[in-house]
Image (cartoon, rainbow, N blue to C red; front, top):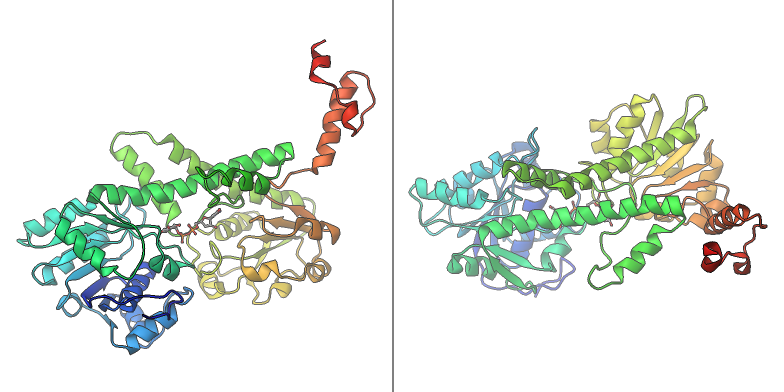
Length: 480
Ligand code: UGA
């Protein structure tokens, strides 16, 4: 039993595995399979990335991954290679963990997957099982199986084994998944892949390749749908004085719904949801089907960024040379990934309005500086907010929850804080004199709204407004 990953792991039979791609899915898969006791060679064709890995440096930031990689390299179970022949020489399994970025028309680009699968089929030993972890359009696994047969490798089995790893908690997600999905009708091959995971306690679901591929898209799209739905409810909360956090808590207590992915705010980003929701909608179009829900989910998400922009523009209207500070750049905490980040999108929109932008993030500043060079980055959050008219909290890093907001109030020129993740203590900030703006936490105070309501009702009837329930007009009255 090993506990380096923070999760107790029981080692089973040692099997030889090649993992194609050392991105975040490939690296996590390689390190975790090695931790389970397998002998893993991770193949990376990018020379710089390979050199980095071979010198013990990780190209991505993912909590607890570094320890896991270095520990398994040291124990001899994990190594890195730059060509297929070396990585595949003794492998019984070839995991395909390469990206499927969006094409201009929204379809997932499967070129890297096909190239990787071809390489594996060409160099793999007899009886190789190709395991597809990349998120691929339905039918890709079948295509690869045909490709193997076409290359006279009918012995190769192709299994879809989608990943459900979240950046920031990927290692934990690997060892404590909700389910392990094995997509193949070849029971033997499926059992072989399941055996690789022995030591991980989770239900194993055997299904067809196509259902496994679709299940991955459907999972991401449904999670994105929940968030967009709550953002729509948040807008209604702002309009009506309800509080979306309380609404989400109540809704999530229904066992049929559950509490996760109901948090309103700037919306979803990252390298997966945006491309996968778009790819699923494109898949629908390709098959001559409509996907109005997916279209709305994307439109609502894009709308959140526009709402944030408008709120900033409203707050700086009439101010000469306004300055806006973003706290957080990563698409979510505990990652240095900027792909699909709402913060990056909003900075782009602010720049077109000629607004001076400053930004802070605990880990992503070097990546951001490469992507958006003209921004005033600060490595200290307090320095970043100096002279700001508006502060937008865009990523809910833990350190922002413990900031000294009195100090921030003193350092800012203006007084507006836009809480893009609904995580700050509203009452505390208001007490300090901030104009606090959030997403669905009630645009106006509930009491104010009740008073307005009562005023409206009573003034229609020529009666004095009041907060007392006794002053409210009973429904029967209005009918009279
Ligand atoms: C997502 C899925 O959660 C994983 O299961 C999947 O394996 C992965 O994509 C993938 O396809 O590889 P990830 O992109 O790491 O994982 O990020 P999530 O934790 O799912 O968050 C996605 C976005 O939703 C973030 O921008 C986050 O801030 C936002 N979010 C999340 C909300 O706005 N509200 C919530 O309540 C939850």
